[in-house]
Image 1 (cartoon, helix red, strand yellow):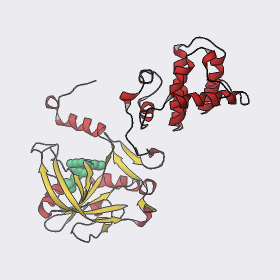
Image 2 (spheres, rainbow, N blue to C red):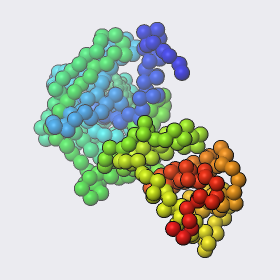
Image 3 (cartoon, rainbow, N blue to C red):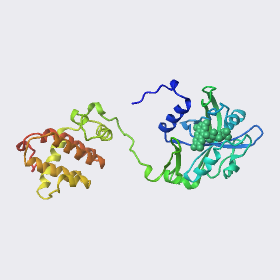
Length: 335
Ligand SMILES: Cc1cc2nc3c(=O)[nH]c(=O)nc-3n(C[C@H](O)[C@H](O)[C@H](O)COP(=O)(O)O)c2cc1C
């Protein structure tokens, strides 16, 4: 672990750590006008949404890292109290990069970067017509964090109008694949939030028992990962041994008609139930319980968890106590 006090390094170095590790960050393409009504457009990835009632977004045009001067976006928002935020899709990335150039004051980056203006309904600054979603915003707060080069100017705005392109909807809500948004990472890196980069995670429906309620052998496992343990710790009560006993009995019974392949093959092909049967067959053959058996059982548990079969993962986890016994005390295959 590197421990770094930001007071001891140049702000450009802090900037790099923040950019690399507070990532990926959504990109706000901020549209503003100056006091003479001249349009300005620039991307900002120190940006996010912060609440829905009322809808609130914030972004930060920092003082220039070079000479500490304010960016045109900041000057315009402070002069007019208004801005648009257009979200950025993959199709727009080259153009947003072009719009980020330090053009002189009064230059219209909509024109420079080839974007079409989307007229706003409630404020003067236009949005970007190519963007899948544009928000019209009124400034609520400006929080200047300092006056040195690189210091933040947090602009908090209330969204007073959403514009959502019809084609991004998949039913009632926009779809990640249709939006195809991009986010900024460290250095020249960006990422694309669609296709295989997007995964789903079920929302907990109850309070889990937590890691602190897991048996020590699971917590100390060299096989099970934090994600595996989190799935086991997500049940709302510790399952009892009876379930595991019934599970073993069923699997033993099925051994008579369904002979598994060797255990590692069954695991490799993603068949944890068959792997468990192979494991049981090995236990019946006898031998003293060893560390290897625990590791194998944990691999089988992991196989069930990969398939989100938490019930059978727990059945396996609890079966260790039963299977540690010598063969004669295994539950009856007729049970
Ligand atoms: C993807 C991307 C994200 C950026 N994020 C920020 C940011 O969060 N804050 C900032 O001050 N500058 C950021 N910049 C740099 C500004 O876009 C750049 O300084 C721009 O010239 C400012 O334009 P303006 O002077 O017209 O406001 C970013 C640039 C890019 C390409």
